Image 1 (cartoon, helix red, strand yellow):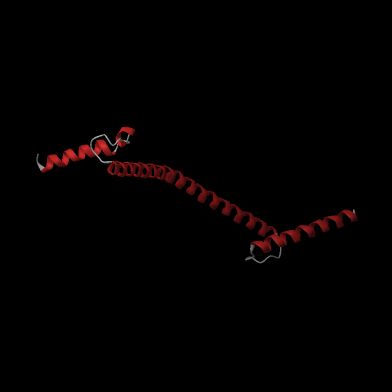
Image 2 (cartoon, helix red, strand yellow; image 1 turned 30 degrees about the vertical axis):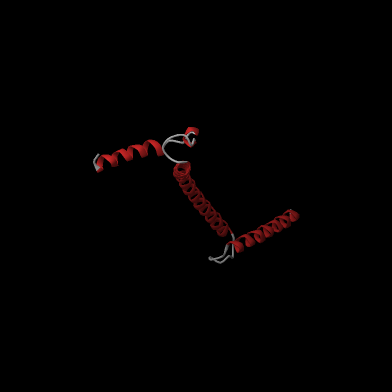
Length: 129
């Protein structure tokens, strides 16, 4: 048999024997072919290949789902921050005597103080009426 023919035969044998799971009869010491150590090594190799293949498949599926979820999370978080900026900007615009570059805690603090002042003013006006 030529070198090329032997190579093709080996590939066919490898394809038929390494890709199938081993059965109980494959581990039987009376069966011709591989010795028990070789069978165990082949079984471990096959199991490892199968595990790797399953892990890669899960990773691909999970990766695309995870990427979609990650992208959605990024978009949602960006929209939340934009909404918060708009709300702080609106609140800032409603408060008199506040510097244009006030930080968020100052805006909230001044809003609380301004609301309290408005409540007192309302109570005073109601007493006068």
